[in-house]
Image (cartoon, rainbow, N blue to C red; front, side, top):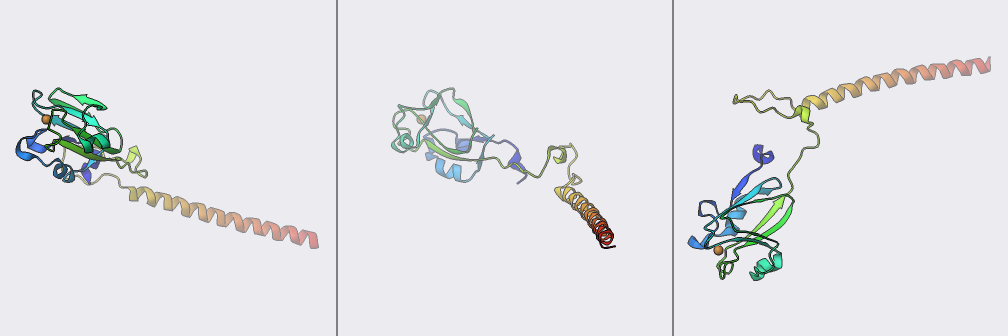
Length: 174
Ligand SMILES: [Cu+2]
């Protein structure tokens, strides 16, 4: 869970890269990893034989590369995962998508803890094994103490008020 806040670069297909050789199962590759906003995909391939086209779900399913939303052809393309949702890619070279050179990625929203303020964020230090960073438990303990003080203060206030009322009532009936 420590790696969740760190943006990852996912090398598509692992060591095989983006190819039709070796029958890389890109579904298997995506299912063994998690993709979060802030991460990026890295497509590595021989640009003479492949490219990367981002397409709609419909075009992904039918292997239609003619209406791509984005096309990458450098051979070393980084695609930033900027928002959660489904992304679909395929190779636009004839027959390659049909040969399963296609990739579907589900991007999850990055988890940002609402209780952890930046002041309490652990500061990265070169020393290892340090576990003395302030924890949220300390903060909630402080809040509990504040609550206790407020509670006793309101109790004092209530008893003062009631004695004043008693005094006023006594005045009226004298
Ligand atoms: Cu290809």
